[in-house]
Image (cartoon, rainbow, N blue to C red; front, side):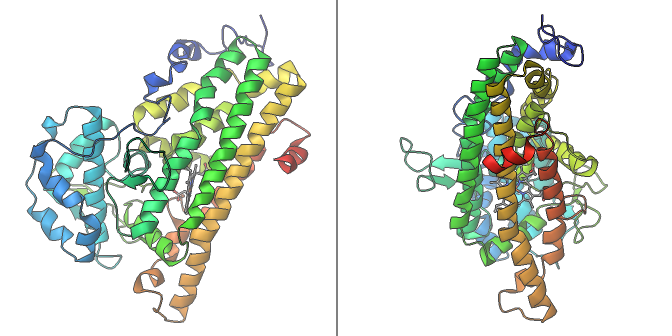
Length: 434
Ligand code: HEM
């Protein structure tokens, strides 16, 4: 039996919990992860049972109703429906998407100057109940907007931007469509990597260096494909339109939100305001899985934010991340084997994850930091020519959700801690080779 550097054995595992969960780990299916689509919900429903038509009638028209300022009035008049006729997982997911889209629009309609403190009962009560049943928070999450919000125009056609559309949209036109669909395609590009996580884990358990090295190379390729897919984001006009998305995204959170300092009361659910962070791909389970697999340890503050984001994921996906974290250390295994192809495969994987995070920083700078600086300039000059909205947003854009440390500092800290995962002595060389 091989011993890990910490003295524990790979075969029997240093952790009993890992042993217990290892069986299920080999079946992604038991974590609601699809072999073909990963964390994406396969074939989401487009309709709810007829009883829920009052929800869908409004949810399908949120962009236009926000624009005409009618959304709040219509939601205030909506009947209070019971959630008990929603039975299947996919019905609950569509209901959550519809209710969260309406909630976002309800808050959003008045902009930053006319925010609300109470979400009306007819929306708040079913939203709360559906969220409880799914184990998701009552707010629009990545699991709603990017994972359960798609359909193919031609069911036999490919998964690409031309053949995909959103089920429910938000104000922002093509940019919103592009933003959520590209994010979904990044999730899709990660599927080969996801499929190989159990292969790595079982390879480590059986001390099969070759199998581990092969699986790590597939994961590296998949990480490269994710970066390449992220590049599609640049097809969607980064400037004004996307700034609008993020102003609006700012309206989709009632935590650390200066416009809603107390949070939001869910009428009929509780009398105290509740605080929830808004949707972000930080809630995607992908990078959490890769971080746990590669043994990447985040700095305290950014790590706490990322850990909190796990509460915004479907519970089965969160469980997968936890179970990966309980497995014997891949990095220790690689170090102990001291096998050149395995070392290289591991380094390659870390380098590709690092490159993905670097590229993401580049995207964020183009979509947020630069437009935010421009908005600040306009505000300082008292100009509103590029639209009233952008001049109102900069602080929100800069501080969004990351515990007040600033988006760039947060993302760079996360990136730098990824670099720490390299095997000793070769980090510069490997990063250069990525
Ligand atoms: C225009 C496109 C995008 C912008 C502007 C953007 C913006 C941001 C921002 C501001 C954060 C900081 C956390 C927060 O505020 O919630 C963040 C985090 C994150 N984003 Fe994005 N994002 C974009 C696209 C994507 C895509 C397509 C993915 C891939 C699925 C992604 C994955 C992540 C991850 C994993 C984090 C957490 C930090 C990390 O683990 O490195 N982002 N993003």
